[in-house]
Structure formats: structure tokens, C-alpha cells
Length: 500
Ligand SMILES: Nc1ncnc2c1ncn2[C@@H]1O[C@H](COP(=O)(O)OP(=O)(O)O)[C@@H](O)[C@H]1O
Ligand SMILES: [Mg+2]
Image (tube, rainbow, N blue to C red):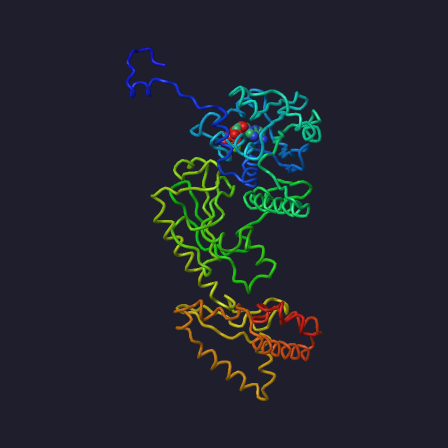
């Protein structure tokens, strides 16, 4: 309170302290909007910043009134001495403006507390920074904050003890940190039906694993092991097999790299499924923003464009150092950025160019380069059209090694007539119409087949198999060659049961 006598409203508001009610503030902070996967990712950030090579996560949702569950994140990182642990448990740490070492994945001094308490009511942190040293343990308990304000407690929550004892830190020679969250009031998978609870739990685990595999894929590729229960988290690389199209810097610090993923005829069905990503094709097109190699934004066009099916192969990687957090509007949960206005024109230009390139690949149903006519691998996926770039144009040629073409050639008495037919067909390719309305003119092969179309395509596939058999392939190989080729490859599931 001010010691002056002036009690006008203005001077009172300048001079009086008006601290938050601790419990009200903490209760609000835990509802910031974390989901279990994003909360766990924030805690894994801390482990990776502490140079951990192994992170083990256990999630045991509440199973009844006597078991309120626990979540633990154990790492083999540097650990903390007691004074550093005390600082680490302080809400807000030293504030967001403290300069950070490069590679520090933290920012606001909140994640450890807010992310943990978004799942449960008690947070215990146990840590050892030197071999043989005593384990330092502190905890925040919401019930205690409600009674006693900002008083931090020493020692573990009673329900966290088994997790700490089962961890590698029970060995005094091991360094690292274990974060244990107990009294999980926000991680219920309960349901009236036991089967539903199991299904919910399995879905929760899948979401957590796929989120962690996505945001930490660079670190996992570098050898950091993240385990969820006994399962090792598999990385998801959004740029696997992508063609690098362009690379430039925005200012001194930010790198932007444009990629276009391969057309689906050039990859296996399994690769196609993998590339679609944890959130599916529409969500991952556009800008993928990394901060210190940790994925923050897994796609979307930063409000510059709308998602478009034909642009789904466009993925543009933006790499930010942690020193530009402020300018790029990083949010506390590290799940979004707001780019500064001076980069928007460049992002628009890069986005437009990459979208154009991605559309061209998406709408094209042929090889990008003409393979040699003597086909190397008989089982390599085969496109019907070859694209042959010349100095000033691109020519489209029918792939003479394609099974349909082989079938056509064999079914005509005079081989010269077949060649004549193919050349005429190539000359008549309605290129203008395709370019004007690429989606409508080129996507026919991937739409669902009508019964009559299926019959036709099946007849053609069978004929192609006969021709291949006559060339010396066995039945299984002939079938596989045909099923790798367009358009049969698009309808593999429909055709396969009827082939032999
Ligand atoms: N697993 C850990 N190992 C070592 N230090 C940690 C760990 N988790 C948290 N810390 C320390 O606690 C501090 C506060 O963490 P946090 O609340 O997540 O904020 P921030 O990561 O933004 O600094 C970190 O800066 C770090 O020094
Ligand atoms: Mg953190």
C-alpha cells in the first residue's frame, strides 16, 4: 500500500500490490489448453534440453477410486542440483526474456509445471546431477497450494514413490530426472464398459506415440530413444523421399526449404500411407515450422492460402532458432507461431511457387523422367505416360514397356500398326484441356470404379498377365508387375482377388 494519503483510484492502482490468488492462478494455468500428447511433448523438451539420450514415459490412467493413476517421464539427462531444482519448480522461472543457449527448447519457464498439472493435481520431480549424490525431490500439490499458497513441498507424493523406486534413479550411480504426475483428475479413460476403457486407453497411447514421433523426429533420427511403456516411439519424417525444390534464408536466422513429395505412382502404398502422417494429408500440407529442430507447427498455410487436395504434396520447412521466439509469436504450449509481418510477402511467394510445383506433380499421372525402354526392374511401379523434358517444352510419351502397351502390341498382327496407333494417340493428347482443368481431366484413375469399369479393367489386367506369361514370367510375377502398373495399381484391392 502507498504511504501517501492520496486515495484517488488512479494512484491506488499504481501503488498497491494486487498479487494473484495462487490457487486461482495455478488452476487457470493448468487449463491453458494442453492435451496429454502436447503436455508430454513439453516435458520431453526439457529432457532433450538436458541432453538426455533416453526418455522413458509411462502412462497409467486412473483405474478406480483407490488407484488415481500416474504419468512419469524419466530421462538420463544432466539432472539438477537442489538449488536448480528449486528454480525449475518456480512458476515462470526467470521470465521469457532470459537469453537461452542455442538448442534450449524451453522459453517461458512454465512447461514443467503447467504441462504436468494439466494432467493431474500433484507434480513430483526427483533428480540427481552427480553420481552418488542424494536424489533431490520437490513437489507441487494443488491441495496444498489452495491452503498455503506458494509453499513448495519437499519429498515425493506417496503415489509417486513406486514410480521413482522403479526408475533407474533408484541406483545412486545414475544421473537424470524423473517427473511424476499423480492424482490424474484430467486423464480419465473411464467408461461404463470395460471394453470401451481399453479402447480409449489404446487410442490415447496411439495419439501420444504418433505426436511424439512427429515432433521429435529429428532427435530420434539422431539417436535419442523415446519409449512409451515398452514401445519405442517411431519417428515420422514429413519429408521422406521428397524432392527439394528451393532453399533460402529470411533475414539471417530463418531457413526456408521447399519440398514436393513424390507422385503416388512413384511410391509404394505403404510409403503413401506413411507420408500421409499422423494427422492426414490435408493437415500436413503447407508450412511445417521447426524451432531448434523440434516440430512446432505440423502443417497449414499460416492463413496465406486454404488447403487444397491438389497441393497436398507441398511441404515447406521453416527452421527457427530460439532467438527469434518473440518476433515469431511462439505460444506457451509451443504449438503455434505468428510470423512477423516482414516475412509474410516472402512466405506468400515461396508458398505460391511450391503450390504450383506440387499441383503439377499431383496432377500428373506419369513418370517425371523417361525411363529407358529396357526396363531394369520388372517389379518397379510403371506409369502409363512418360514425361520427357526438352529445352523449351515437355513431351508426353506412352511408356512402351507398360503391360497394357505390351498387350496392345501383341494383340495386333502387325507390330508397325501398334506403333502407329501409339504415336497418333500421343499426338492427340488433349494437353490444353488437361492444363486448364487438371483435377477434372486427370484424376479419373483414382476415383471409385463402377461395376462395368471394373469388369473392363479386370479383363485388360488378365490379358496383360497372359502376355507377360508368354514372355516367360511366372503367374505370380506377372500379377505383381501388372498390379504395380497404372491404372491397375490404383485398384489393386478390387482386382487382386479376381486375377488367378
Ligand atoms: N528433465 C529435466 N532435466 C533437467 N532440467 C530440467 C528438466 N526439466 C526441467 N528442467 C529445468 O527446469 C527449468 C524450467 O522448466 P520449464 O518449466 O519447462 O520451463 P522452460 O523449459 O521454459 O525453461 C528448465 O529451464 C530446466 O532448467
Ligand atoms: Mg520446458
